[in-house]
Length: 83
Image (cartoon, rainbow, N blue to C red):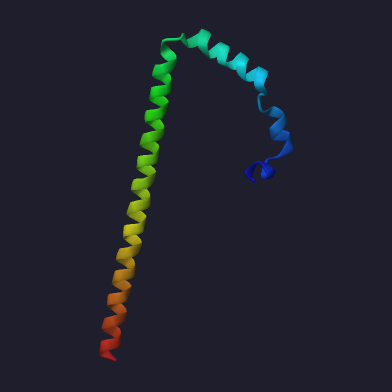
């Protein structure tokens, strides 16, 4: 479904199967076979840290919203009791 929203011009710039193989060979030549697992590990750790930070921010926002709702509820209860 998401691919339907992609511009056709963008699809012409995406590498095909043969181009992907050439790119893979260039990466192997530049970095060597021993460095590729280290690069993949570093990439995986970076993605994991990003997801943890994203979840932490989401949790902070949700807890802040709950605190605000709690304050609003207490304020409304106090106002109703005084009336």
